[in-house]
Image (cartoon, rainbow, N blue to C red):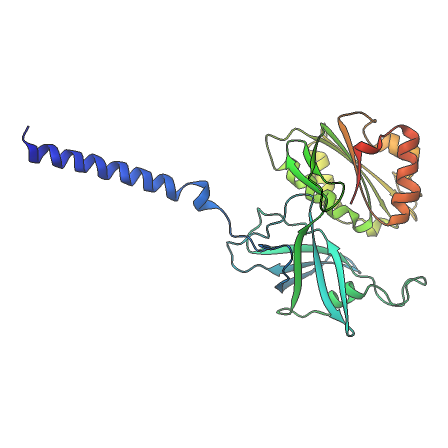
Length: 303
């Protein structure tokens, strides 16, 4: 074999190697990495309202557009965002947990219960930000900031939990997660439910006790019951209502020890309890009854 022939062969092999390396690079995770919307947690990003879906007389799904169809929000499971707006000349800021995830590209979905004025006697002004959201027209924007929060779900039962914002997180491992939610407090729980059951390698078992005023107030009920049907051995679902109808088949009234025993996993070192709802529910119904039943403080977390 002469030198020129050998040189051509080596050049050809080099081209094949370079091509293979390029293909590997273009298909690598680095190239597939999704652009993130929430780059800086201290910066407000204006997102445009592109769709509003009516779920009930006072509940909506608001869909906001991300910077491009390829963008994800950039929100870890367990974290939340803040919406802010000037309402009647004053800045109003509220935390929310989207029901969409970073697998959903190009948009963010929020389930919002609108608290109208002159409906509840204790709150005659209603919800300032929820009424503002209700007034938005398609194409209007709202400022979004995040991620924020003291808990992050790392997957397969691993939770990273901080005692405060400045502290380093500690890892809590859970084979079972017992969730208690009230009203719109279902949204961070749904975030976790979706994350667990969308991962084939995640074998974590979940239970949920969900409290509401009336049956019509139960948010995301259809999806929750679909998960229960698909994963009956790993997802337990139970409800309680303040004002049930005549054919109601679940619990009635404020959360108590009997409901917790029925709906949740028993206390253990492998069972993490998560709570989200109105402060009176957490402080006067959940925590005292959990303590009474032996659920340790280091295996409880309140959003």
